[in-house]
Length: 346
Ligand code: SAH
Image 1: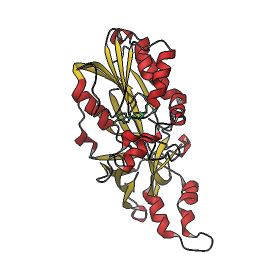
Image 2: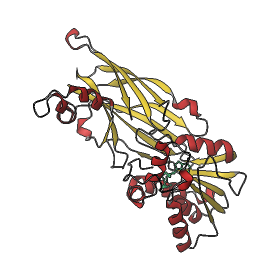
Image 3: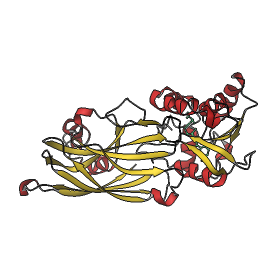
Image 4: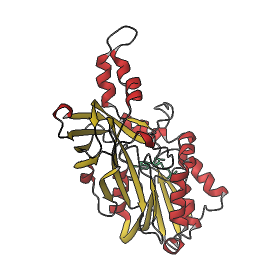
């Protein structure tokens, strides 16, 4: 999934959207435009991982009924047909599905793929149960946009007992980074703007995580997994969580921010397929998510940063997240002892 909201489409664009919340309308409209699909299809790490996971497992896909949740341009549906699926059902709310129909037809797969426009939670499937669910549902910080809810709905409603989910494991990772220069540019900027005190906006800027690529050399702590989701068992309530973490400091430096990223695994493959969206590996359109701390920590090699990461879908708009990070530097040095608690919205 791509997250970037492409343009500001007219709210009249799609009558079916009437009755939905404004934010929902906006969300689905953003997927109407081909640009957002271009970004996802061009994401080599993303699309190749799905392709490999499907093509390298023809023994799993052969003669199966597959559900592609949020099929977009139907790329994953066509991978599944090529891997021998008996039939694929692709569901998407966005008008891109009209183009997906044409794409499927020009590729000679119209008799193998049924495409339904609508919300996954509302459409009527032509099969009561499916053998395999494929979906690319991940947002920034893994959970932004909360499309995972939709995949869990599809799992509980349609997956046969013993059916498979591609991918089936997702994990969130954290690390501390030195980012003085950019923090100054983005946050310090608000201290003085054209001769005026703009600090009210500084607080706002601090609460908004930045989605950006982080250079590996900025990473000051060990990359640390903090949460793993098993798609076979996870429930909606697990997406409200509070987890403790310990980050081991690798070198003497400052820590201006914590960054988060996610890894994805297709574990039911002949040869398991994984990809990471971390700073130590190839670029993906998810980049990393940067959470600036109110005050920088001065850290020394071997010390630890202890903390808690809390996440909760926003009460008003479930697609937004309320995230809290509490942290404390474990140091013997009274002059550098520090702790804090920051709240973010994304
Ligand atoms: N599978 C495609 C597109 C992934 S983007 C690919 O891999 O390239 C996610 C898609 O899911 C978007 O096109 C969006 O419109 C759709 N989507 C998100 N939530 C949905 C829901 N509840 N019902 C139907 N479609 C949904």
